[in-house]
Length: 415
View 1 (cartoon, rainbow, N blue to C red):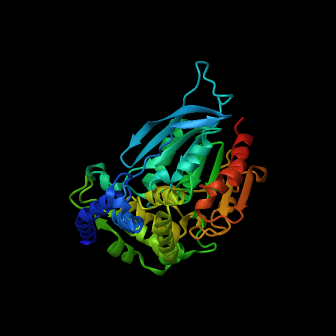
View 2 (cartoon, helix red, strand yellow; view 1 turned 30 degrees about the horizontal axis):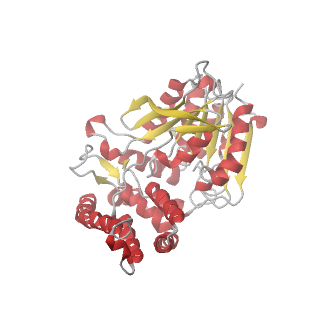
View 3 (cartoon, rainbow, N blue to C red; view 1 turned 120 degrees about the vertical axis):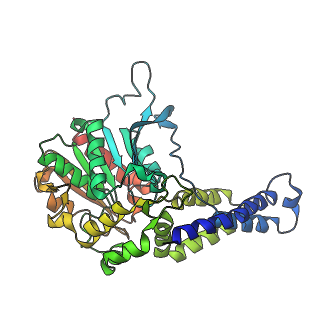
């Protein structure tokens, strides 16, 4: 149970060396520094920066969305909190309009709630998703809080609580005009939340867009799924759950630490990450600053991770990956049975990547077999050729191939 403390001790021990490496990289590369003119300065600077980036602590990035370009004109965008809960903030990206409330005909466009994954990375991983959606929608997003920053006085946070958060956010925005996009892990709690709301007779969103999520992990199981199946529940609790150290507000809270999840991410493709860092070194030596900057942007996001509350993490392993309670029709959330067949007035779009190694093909599409109350004409599935997990919601393939279909699907049910 001392693993987290040992990790923090290691970070503290590494900190002076990473600061020193950062300073070294600057001294041997800065214009005007006499050290930048010594033989081999570019290689020395590159080596220092590589060491710095491997050893540094990565803080939560910012969304950094401050403007939106529409038809060649640039408009300001502000980020504001709509609702704050202990483990999540509901954010709205507000586009500034003219005095008449118009933004090149964008007034009255449909509101979209993007439910970001709570699976190790921060919600800023969906920055590209949000920025693209802002062209044609009012965009809200769930910004999950690092569990190590939540005092124990706030109480526990379980998968059932996650479902309740989603319900509260839908009600806050207004379900009657809302479209919900869930990316990866939240496809399960989002489907549960809307199912429960439908069963109670509440208004439900106009459409659900589910992207690369583990609705039924018995379909095309991946390496992630295999780990959950192979290990007993006691193993997860004994080896992956640790108390937060005393230097954080959540001191004593039991969490699944982000650094363990990050280690798991890297272990899935160690050769690719090693090659990426070697390429980064070579780009610095050769003066290819554009590719080096691209590497920095990617790993600033990829290496920034958060802790997950132990209750939520263990619930997810059991409910989603081991017992498959949602597709088996056996999942109860706070005493209410989750029945996706109760959904009737909500359109459904599922999206999968051809080469997704986190949620295999068929896992997200399984939602169609569960949502039998949704008319066949209001259901659609897309398999994105050549896309991995991240390609369906980020990058050029998302912007040019996936988003136009998502936009058109939402527009079909917006009126």
